[in-house]
Length: 154
Length: 154
DNA sequence: GGTGAAATCCTCGAGTG
DNA sequence: CACTCGAGGATTTCACC
Image (tube, rainbow over all chains, first blue to last red; front, side, top):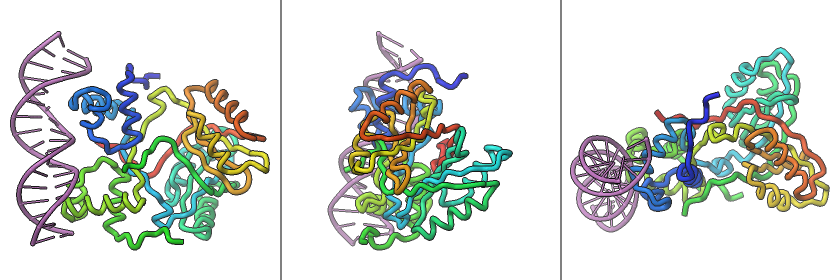
């Protein structure tokens, strides 16, 4: 139980919040905002990345505008002897799978899937059912979604 | 059925992939990678943001290292007369709620929650049960997770 | 889409408490 | 040890081709 790397002070938390809102903020903007020099902000962000609190940066995409209008969560049930590593290995290999969450209890995994249309989603689910020792699925169709934090830049 | 804004060519898709992998890549790095000038890359990325394909940029965080070690999905069921807007309004008001997905069928919503520990999660679920016209919940405890794309920077 | 120049930003060593 | 300062280099930005 090492994990938590010493202390993160309030400034670190402010930087994390600022970078969650807009991952491309400049160090100088953040410096002005929290009242530190640019170099100090860079060192703190470098440190947050180095200790693994910040694992990376990414663009958020409107997949509907790319023609991937369908979003669903599929609950997967596996035969009792299936190891978790096997569940992860097989599901992550399906390109439409966006995220995999292994679950305690029933179901065994929850899969976030994106597809172009319902027919495509059907195919993805069929693929998932055929992959590994899946004994059952239940799919929740997403009608709308909301995510905390990420801010649209002007 | 307007949505798709003309054509996105292969270079646009490459830029999207590069920015998904690392949202802080410089224009000059991407320019070198896809064989375009820096200005052309900036113009394309600006356009992708302007038409809403790229909705923003964000840092990815290891919440466990911030002391938020618990992650769960909670399925919510509401009384039949509850409008979707009401579901979104009430759930997003709970600070531990990271994302809300409204669902076609049963359940009515799927909520992504983060908490410091099990006791904290219990409190959050209790809060959700009290908020709005919730008639029932089922919580899936996340043991492990995997997400596509985002790349750890060296 | 490319070029070039000005403004801004990043980076790192040196100095301070 | 964390911060500030400052200079050199890289990056962004924008008007023009």
